[in-house]
Length: 167
Image 1 (cartoon, rainbow, N blue to C red):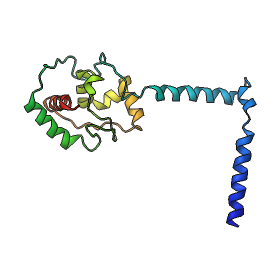
Image 2 (cartoon, helix red, strand yellow):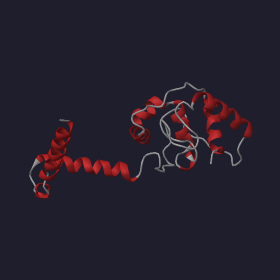
Image 3 (tube, rainbow, N blue to C red):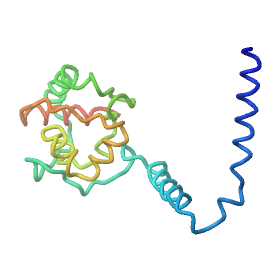
Image 4 (cartoon, rainbow, N blue to C red):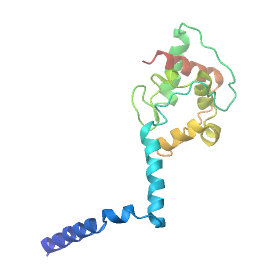
């Protein structure tokens, strides 16, 4: 009985696959086909360059940080404090060098401005609602919003300094 059911399922699947003829896709004027074309275009946009790989160093994001210049040398004390804060507050969703629930911060300063990073840490709710890059990241990471840790600006700056040490 089970074997017969499996054979019937395979036969039905083969028939359905063969019924989706190539000629029907070439016909115009059928609204169902137009919807498929639109979906395919959206998939191509997402597949070409994921938001986590896009480089945008001009976007400063939305939040309290309007301008920030980083010194050439890394402040090791601040970076150590940032590593501690990162370990306590961020590792539930982020891994330094690999994609997890959220993106990996290694090399983030090659893709984002320091202001954008600070605003994302300090103001994730508004960023994911209004900033196009943060919105795209939200979509890329399955709609998992970044939790607002309510970090003071000093801790967020220390975390940014820690990110500078990650390669």
